[in-house]
Image 1 (cartoon, rainbow, N blue to C red):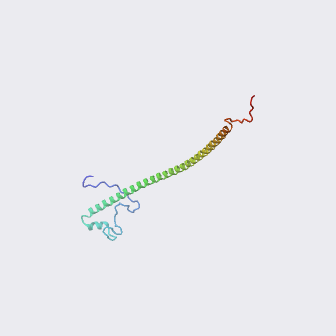
Image 2: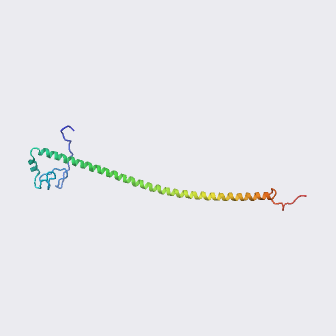
Length: 165
């Protein structure tokens, strides 16, 4: 802005109920007590301005400017709060979705763990059967070795064989 000039202020909404809205200039009587000066109710704003002398217009303009700044700050704060609330809602939805994904992953991990346990059981059963087969084959080999050792290297017995003359 150019030095010494005020930036344009946004148009303030007007109340349709007769009750002034925040930032709207009030006419007539002041509120119950002026928070700055502590003046009692019943004193009109025009009377206060006349009592102040020539600087009353400057004070009124400064007061109006401060009030407009406060209203602008309030509006900006409300807008920031609304944006923050929207972001928090979105983040809450993201957290909820993430929690759903974590639960689904947890269920998948439990299912995978159960499948791995079943595979491990099958492997153990197959190993047991293989060891039993190996032991049976070793027993058969041992019996055959014994038979060969006691039968002069022959597997069949000599009792039932006939000699040729």
